[in-house]
Length: 220
Image (cartoon, rainbow, N blue to C red; front, side):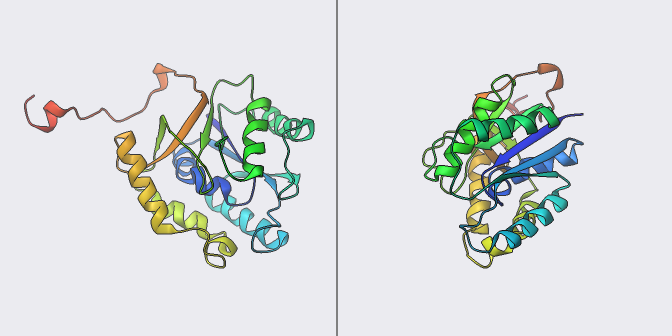
C-alpha cells in the first residue's frame, strides 16, 4: 500500500497546498499522514480552536494526524525540527513526502521545507506544494484533481476560523488556480508541485492516455 506524508507548518497549510491530491490518494487506497508542525496561535482563532478544526479536517480526509509540537512563528531549521520530522518519517515510512515550497514569504514555511528536505534526505520522492505566500513557483509535476475541487473546498471549510472568520481563503481563487494548473498539466484541474526528488517507476504509472492532436482532429 502506498504511504504519503504531508508536512505543513500550520493548520490548513496542507489542505491549501495539496488537499486535492491527498483526497485522490485516499480514494486510490493510499495511507495518508498529516504532520502539522505548529499550533497556529498567531493566526485567527486560539490554538484549541485551530487544533479542533484540524482534527475535523483530518477525519474528513481519512488521514492520520500528527502534532509537531512547535509554536507558531518559531520554526527554525535546526536539530529539533529535523529530528521531529525524522521521527515521523521513521514511523510512517512514506513512499512520497509533500511539503512547502522553499521560496516563501513566511518564515515557518521556509523552515518546514528546509527541515523536511534534510530529514528526508534518504527518501526517493520529495515534492513541494504552493501556498498563498509562495513567492516564486514553477511546478513540473501535477496532481490530477479533476472533479475533486468541491471536496477540497469542503475540506478547507473545516478550518472555519481561516475560511469564514478571517477570509484568508478565497474559494474562487483556488478553483481558478486549479484550472490554470490543470491547463499546465494537460488535465482539467490540478495541483502543482516542484521537485527535490521524484522516483519514476514506469511499472506503476496510472495516467490517462494523452489525446494527441491528430486524434483530436480525427486524422487517426
